[in-house]
Image (cartoon, rainbow over all chains, first blue to last red; front, side, top):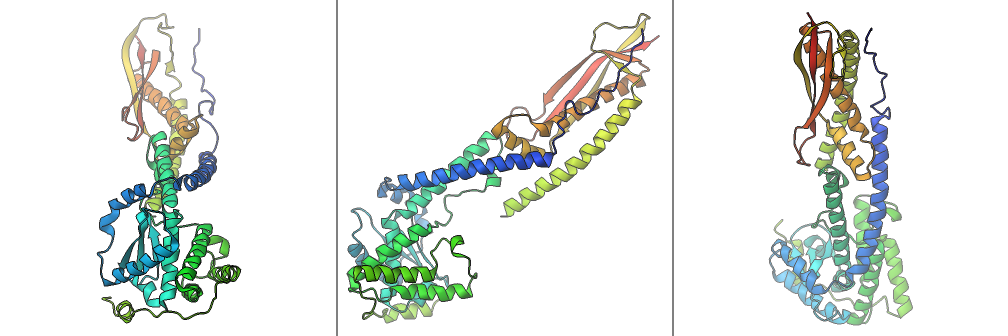
Length: 282
Length: 147
């Protein structure tokens, strides 16, 4: 009897699908699922954040306490102004605001977890009046009052946990790294609707403190000038902050609807603050 | 950002290098399979030859590792389930290469056939899921040389 081993045909044990096609199909599927989960988690975090007690927020923020700059005369002045804003804005009991001053030319201010509000010298130096500064402070405090930092933080946390779970499920950290690390300490950015809500609350506070809202729109006029020198003009839909012109218009609309005068006597910034903001260590 | 660039660079190099190596390997496998067709392979335990033959154990072993691209694709695939296509060609190459090495050993001994052929695999990194993926495929059997 004759024996022979025939050569088996190719392609039985190996799929002929192109590996790149396979990869793109998997990646596409994953991105669609990730997008759905992302949106669902973001909505959920927004809904749940309101029920997180402020004490918890303080607990979380106490971990970063060492990162905040040491208090000084400028932060004391900011704190003083903030205390007046807090009284006018009627924050819930137990919610306290702590102002921090950073000696840096960055034109920025932001609110973060635990009622901590950080102001940069660059922004204070640009403020034409105390009223304008109070507007910015009110705006940041309104973020805290409306629980925006904790809801943004919760969203980041939920997504971070999701990424960790996915990467654990796939048996390696590669997928997790590819999806990007939704870290805990990334800068908290707020949505446009959150910014608009904070603007409206800040305007109400300003009217309550000074009896008029003069100076409120100066902040955004300043920012408008800044941005024309800056990154350039992105279309409105791509920006998280409502366009400055839109915000100026919104301020005028809200002021008119509530009968708050747009004109009035504005308070100048104390001489010491103006000098400090200009003559810095830098 | 630097992480992402490194990741993409590894992915691209894993894909191109892995693909080139795979094509080259398949060409070599097909050519050598034709070359060594005269050494026959049987899974049967009993020799088909009636004449007396000397017997010897012959083995062929291959250790094969995934590339970065295959690793990422299989990582993604493991989220959804289904055929791990990225690994199919890898293991196919490993099996055929192991048989070829076994045949080579048999032919060097002057054998005409190998009976009772079996395969054995062993995962090199063991069960640690975060380690690299590599597997040994070994083919072994009894080579029969006509006396």
